[in-house]
Length: 395
Image 1 (cartoon, rainbow, N blue to C red):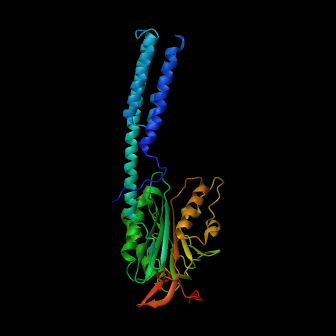
Image 2: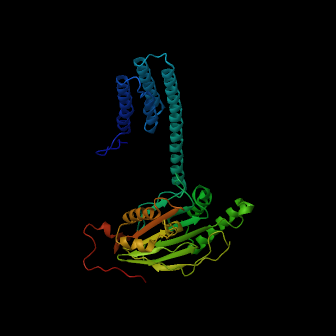
Image 3: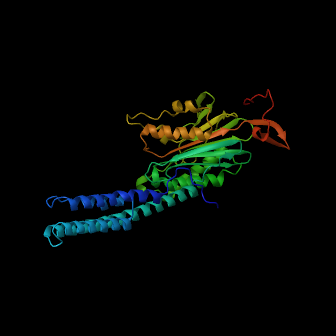
């Protein structure tokens, strides 16, 4: 693997550390020179403690110890200049500075150890996120995909929201869900739901039956592992969408989940859920039904969890997703998600109260000319679609 090219203007950490190290050293030199030249009635030596006190903010325990030793040496030099080392005042100052420097070294060591532990936790969290919730592909079937996951808990990479996409015959099946709770406590249920979806989604069973299978999995999990004091409180909302490679009739099953938004240039429409089902795990054996709608080439389908629309600003106002997303209906999925992330975090002041997830699915335009028995996308043709071609409407 070739080394990562260094971006122009990028600073290496050791350069910053060495530059910052000049500050405590300069302080020690200036204080020492001024104190040795000042009258004996002026005592600047105690100010030397500032130098080792500043060092742990940018350096480790060894550098802090070196700066502390330099400060103690400077204090000894000042004592030798002003009456010798035998005076009680100088002895107390030297001992005090040495003890404070030792405490600062201990603090720096503990801080460095905690930073290493935090880095390890972040690495484990990122690995767990990739294992439980695989990154969505940028392209799958006729779709371009971009996604966003924002965990509510500090330093967490995963939580109670989830999403997945897979191929099922000649269609793409997408799941987005939200289990009860947030952050790390909800990971178990999220992992179960994702595993059940991946196990069943590739089978050519109707979408309603797939929802029923996920419902049974969540119900079994709750029956086996749910504590008695939490009886009936383990459930998950979910939205299942099936997008065929050909044709524009898209199927959807909602289990207590917010409806998606359908974006076309200049327009935003909330896809109605005419036959919603209860959340998964609430009523085992519920008969799930389908809603259908037209998802045409060039449109974008935006799926989201309630952590997005229930995010509040300082005044308690919910995030107006449909209103805000209307600004970016002609953007690519990646640009749309980027804008929404920045706008959502700005709305809440940088910190969410609940996990939030977003998926943007853009249906790429398709040229209906058949090539070797397959439907070829417009990108496959070097010169683009034939002049005068029209966008096909849904059945």
